[in-house]
Image (tube, rainbow, N blue to C red; front, side, top):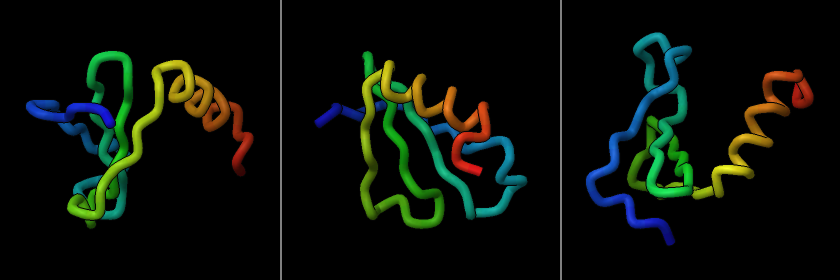
Length: 64
Protein backbone atom coordinates (compact mmCIF):
# COMPACT_ATOMS: atom_id res chain seq x y z
CA UNK A 1 0.00 0.00 0.00
CA UNK A 2 1.26 3.47 -0.84
CA UNK A 3 2.39 5.68 2.03
CA UNK A 4 0.19 8.77 1.77
CA UNK A 5 1.62 10.58 4.76
CA UNK A 6 1.91 14.27 3.93
CA UNK A 7 0.52 14.04 0.39
CA UNK A 8 -1.62 16.83 -0.99
CA UNK A 9 -5.02 15.75 -2.25
CA UNK A 10 -6.29 17.77 -5.22
CA UNK A 11 -9.98 18.00 -6.03
CA UNK A 12 -11.08 18.00 -9.63
CA UNK A 13 -11.56 21.49 -11.04
CA UNK A 14 -14.83 20.24 -12.54
CA UNK A 15 -16.43 19.75 -9.13
CA UNK A 16 -17.29 23.46 -8.97
CA UNK A 17 -17.14 23.53 -5.18
CA UNK A 18 -19.53 20.60 -4.67
CA UNK A 19 -18.63 17.43 -2.81
CA UNK A 20 -19.51 15.15 -5.72
CA UNK A 21 -16.15 14.53 -7.24
CA UNK A 22 -12.88 12.72 -6.66
CA UNK A 23 -9.56 13.77 -5.21
CA UNK A 24 -6.17 12.69 -6.52
CA UNK A 25 -2.81 12.49 -4.73
CA UNK A 26 0.56 11.70 -6.27
CA UNK A 27 3.00 9.79 -4.06
CA UNK A 28 6.31 8.55 -5.45
CA UNK A 29 5.45 6.59 -8.61
CA UNK A 30 1.79 6.04 -7.73
CA UNK A 31 -1.46 7.95 -8.00
CA UNK A 32 -4.18 7.53 -5.39
CA UNK A 33 -7.86 8.43 -5.83
CA UNK A 34 -10.60 8.86 -3.24
CA UNK A 35 -14.22 9.97 -3.10
CA UNK A 36 -14.55 13.60 -1.99
CA UNK A 37 -17.81 13.05 -0.13
CA UNK A 38 -16.55 9.96 1.73
CA UNK A 39 -12.82 10.41 2.31
CA UNK A 40 -12.74 7.93 5.19
CA UNK A 41 -13.93 5.09 2.93
CA UNK A 42 -10.41 4.67 1.63
CA UNK A 43 -8.73 5.08 -1.73
CA UNK A 44 -7.36 3.09 -4.60
CA UNK A 45 -3.85 3.39 -5.93
CA UNK A 46 -2.60 2.92 -9.48
CA UNK A 47 0.87 3.03 -10.96
CA UNK A 48 1.79 6.04 -13.03
CA UNK A 49 1.45 4.06 -16.27
CA UNK A 50 -1.97 2.72 -15.26
CA UNK A 51 -3.16 6.23 -14.39
CA UNK A 52 -1.83 7.59 -17.68
CA UNK A 53 -3.65 4.87 -19.64
CA UNK A 54 -6.87 5.64 -17.75
CA UNK A 55 -6.60 9.38 -18.49
CA UNK A 56 -5.93 8.67 -22.17
CA UNK A 57 -9.06 6.50 -22.29
CA UNK A 58 -11.16 9.22 -20.63
CA UNK A 59 -9.84 11.90 -23.00
CA UNK A 60 -10.64 9.74 -26.02
CA UNK A 61 -14.26 9.29 -24.79
CA UNK A 62 -13.79 5.55 -24.43
CA UNK A 63 -16.16 5.46 -21.43
CA UNK A 64 -18.93 7.63 -22.90
